[in-house]
Image (cartoon, rainbow, N blue to C red):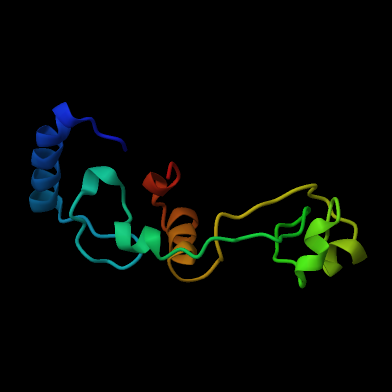
Length: 118
């Protein structure tokens, strides 16, 4: 959530009140959230997500085994070349491990709908 300078003091008061009344925890590390109005995941956990970087398969988004394939139009990984795919294109924002895995599990299995927007 982006906050302008004029509403910043109000935002700090709301964060303090929520922290005192509800003591919300980060959905990943379970530490108390300093700024609960900014989401259910602390900034340290968000920054720990390892982004998926090119070269990636044009179909499934998995990392390609070699950078040489990145220069080929519609580069595909060995699995996507071997098997017909139902999905035409997929991407992930990061490696499905650690914090990102915990966020996805909290959203899907823990009912933490507040995680859907970020």
